[in-house]
Length: 608
Ligand SMILES: Cc1cc2nc3c(=O)[nH]c(=O)nc-3n(C[C@H](O)[C@H](O)[C@H](O)COP(=O)(O)O)c2cc1C
Image (tube, rainbow, N blue to C red; front, side):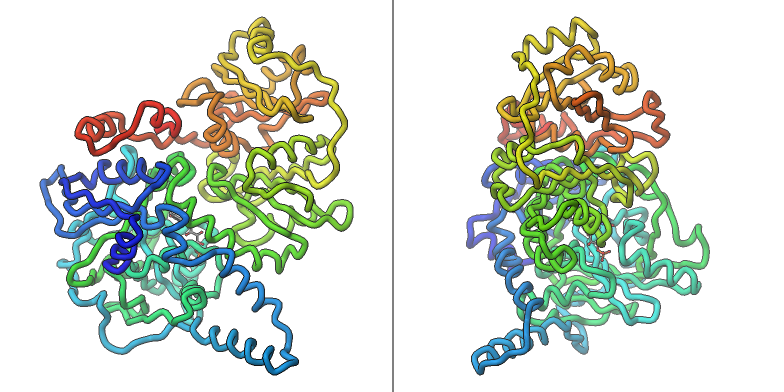
């Protein structure tokens, strides 16, 4: 971490805050606000304190290490360049000429570095060793990010596990809840690799070893979130990208190998002998969807050792409403994985997962269409591959579409091509965090094939926002506000906010007189800081909240998406989670103390 801090400093990407700040809400709130700023920086908090107990830590906390694209390039590299290297390896043909032979050997030789190297003896991460009762999680400045969180959570932990037969190794980035000084919750979700390993140990009635790294090279944590297939150790990706092997040492109290330059390593075991000994209620936790994930059962481990460097730094992140650090991490992942995705979807040209679609809620893909149904075929391929299968809404465009990151041009291109006949609604695996599906981890999928030509004129009569709102309010007073977007396209989008008093299909049907004025209607709640004039947060809200099997209605030529919170009107049986919001008093206090320099407009824009 010290090296990372130096790199950040040299590149003018680091703020240092020496003031005493609380590990409960204060530090995470400051980091949360910072990474939403235009030229966001990493922050080193040199004096973390637990105000509840008065405990002062001599361990600094580093946050937002991936604070922007520049920081990602410094620590990971150029995503496009790495993607191209992977692509050239995947396409490698037997060399014919001498110069081709040389270049092929170079590439193969580089692959040698992908195998992590096991070192004998102790690593820098083991300069200080605390065993048994001396290994206390409360000695680390572990943050509580959100008011409703179930406790403190380690948010940038590299979780190392192995399969029961030791043949497969895994590094996953999962959040870890602190219960007591020596028990730590392991939030590996149902689809994730370590969860599969856990079930092997459980079936065999064997203790499962787990080691958790914190800090070291920031690249480790990025590798931990990379969606590699089971059986491929993420540290091989480290070796490939860095062109040098990860250097590992054995944990002190279990057989798991961890990178030697980590700042901390937490070691332990899960006792799988009974449900009570292995499973506890985890959460709630303010998650990267911008909603809380509610309490659920997850495994936990007993800590047997905590080791660290002599002068360690504690690394953490904040997840919540976008944009946050995971935007920049995710963007690098997207670029690097494009060639790998092309191996299952060869006619894919590009794809883009905007961060306000929180990655799994919205994907835009550009393809070369070769035959009718090609886009649908690729949608099914996406929905059938690894973590790509979590994607809820997929929009496919053809080669003639603009650059996908050109938001305005891409939206126009899409809206000019949405054809009701081409909507694909299906069902499948969704992310374990999805709160809107009627059942846990299974829900609706919506695919829009916009690869065709522009559709014909729609024959609607456009009204101004005021005229349209007044027409609607003459039908019902449930509707509070309205804004139309992209009225210059074939499918203008009308957003209305409502005080919800019934199932929104009924409202949509009652609005039949306005079908002659609208094409796509989106409904949101008037509450929850929603603002019809804030398209960035509208996209975030709506793609989070809809399940296309329940919330998509079509009448005549009009499409309606119900982006409201679901409840008994919708026959919704699960608990609907709260938004992840900052504590208003903490924000105000930090503003009064001059630590946060933000305007009311900023608070509103990002719905803090
Ligand atoms: C900031 C951040 C936090 C994450 N937290 C979790 C988590 O708590 N649980 C989880 O299963 N995945 C979490 N993920 C996603 C996983 O890291 C990701 O799916 C990874 O590919 C899992 O690795 P695996 O396939 O080896 O299990 C998180 C990702 C990021 C960027």
